[in-house]
Image (cartoon, rainbow, N blue to C red; front, side, top):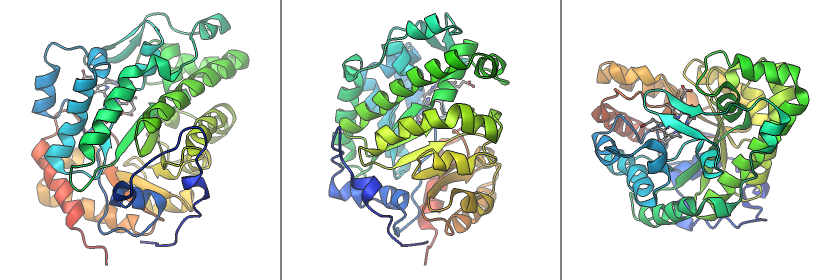
Length: 368
Ligand code: 1CP
């Protein structure tokens, strides 16, 4: 593991809202790895660690809609803490969804079980974009309350567990707004991008502003890192990403960078974009399981990496999973810093006991 310290400029510059990460969290393995500092063990958390793979999640969600859960502070706190209690992971991720800020703004949408976000009136014109208000922290009192409650609870868990705030990046959120729901090809979204540059620019600016305010609100309330999910950016060529998407993600990451917390930037199928996603302003680049870390690390340069065990390996025998996890950790040692994760979210049918074993495997892996 490389131990050179990154210049503190990007991580400690404080402007709009001071990031008051307490010392015991600043010294956590997760935040050290994000800053490229030496760590006692490789930190680990799992994307979608809260959710349908956990029986305790299914229990508290009984009869409660997804969006309702995301707007109820007691449920947000409980669901976010569940995987921290169970696995002893090195970070918690705030329980919410990338479309939640749109819901808070009054956009008519729902998160349908087994489908995902569905938008009643897809956005296609400048008028549609103008009808979406700008987000302010006043739209998000339940987020502030939940983050503050969580930070209090997490301070005493496993020696202090940092909270990751998150938002959807402009392209991925635009995909739901333009398509009206989940999509494989993102054809309508890309048609708007190619064919109506003014609408596209207005939409991306609007969503970028919303994402930045959503992240700022979480950091102001105590989150000590953020992840910007551009899950579907892998649908783009590097040139289209650079022209039509990267400047918008960069603005979001720049605003959050002013708060002094590490910024993780992740997408699926982005082997062709890892350099550009890093250059958008990430401190840590998330890598999906298709790209070996050996290939990803030279592309992201002086940034840390996060990832990238194939999420289906938890269905293999434990020794097979453990051996593949060890390979990921060894490969990650060549990066400026490495945060272990799956290459995408936990698959709902995952056995939680297997994730507990995986956490232990990562923590026990010797680094000297
Ligand atoms: O009823 C349910 O339980 C619905 C399942 C579910 C859950 C648990 C959805 C619907 N969202 C979530 C929570 C969620 N969403 C988290 C929680 C925290 C954690 O990781 O533990 C996070 C980080 C997200 C972010 C999110 N939502 C992303 C980016 C991350 C990724 O997986 O790439 C995306 C693309 C979404 C949209 C979304 N929300 C829900 C679903 C099923 C989807 C994907 C739909 C699709 O395939 O397009």
